[in-house]
Amino acid sequence: MRTRSTSPGAKPVHEGDVEGPEVANQQEDGPDPSSPEPPRSPDSDSNEHPQASASPIEPIPRIPAPWKVRGDIYSFSLWTSKAKAESMPKHHLFSQLEAHSSFADSESSKPVGGLGSIQILRYKETPVGPYDELVVVPGSYEWERKGPDGRRKGGSNLKISRVYVSQKHTCYNGRLNWNVPKHLARFDWQYDPNGVTTVRVFPHDVSGDPHEPCPSPEPFFQATFKPVRFAPRFPFATEWVAFLGLDTTLVMPPLPAGSGSQGELPGTDRWCSFLPHQYSRRTALGWFDMAQREGNSGRVLGEYENFLPGLGRWQFGVLMEDAELTFHTPLETWEGTSTSSGSGQITRAKL
Image (tube, rainbow, N blue to C red; front, side, top):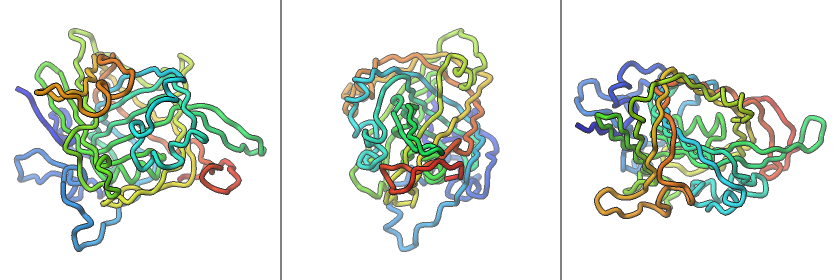
């Protein structure tokens, strides 16, 4: 029997109390204990336009870093050449808001390719309650800044290009805390008894409406994870890849402000770098089916058959079960010469 869920926390392994501040206990983000139906997130699943009501938009509480969270991580790595990275279409790698801003400007943040990843996460314990997330990291991007001695300093690091989340509180705070370009989406999950998991993501930002009021009728992204049979679970931490000489520090440009219908799209004016940590005692190997086809008709959903141009249908990856994640305060922040007339001096102040 297949289990279907449209909200984080509905999967049996996600049952239990959620730790967090008062926003996690508000009625709009939690299920009605008397209702037998699975909980749904009104921030992502509602088709109503909040601005159409007479009441003003309720301010979203600010929850600064650090965040310590728990959840399941579906992840696989990908490799992109520099030539392919430079030819990747901006309108697909970035949401419309960021694609038309300095966040996606190749002059200040030039794509160089290399190792990237796609992650789908089901958080069950966070400071803002449970939520789902899709993270696209196409590879590394060049950056440049002025150091404390006044000299120019540059490098290349991973950059998140596109992110979708299932509720407004993480959307708002993720943008402010770490310059992560989060936008709202509805997530649809299907679980088979043999461990096969399918997820589909229906974004709010693809209709052309700058208010991003409701999810699209068709998925922007879909994937199916099939675990390798009889393969043992094992512990894994992302920080261990440093022993292979890989730097997983993310460097994120400032974000433009949007006109989100729930007030969930704030902008920022500084660059930042940060290094997330992910650890799981039970990591499973598996294959991701990236075919973006409709089940019945076989019609390709979107522009690319396997989500990204040149990406093969089958990708080898992992499921990090009940993982512990830490998102620290940014390592550094600095002004960007492409977005401000400031000195570009580095500071260690919070965003």
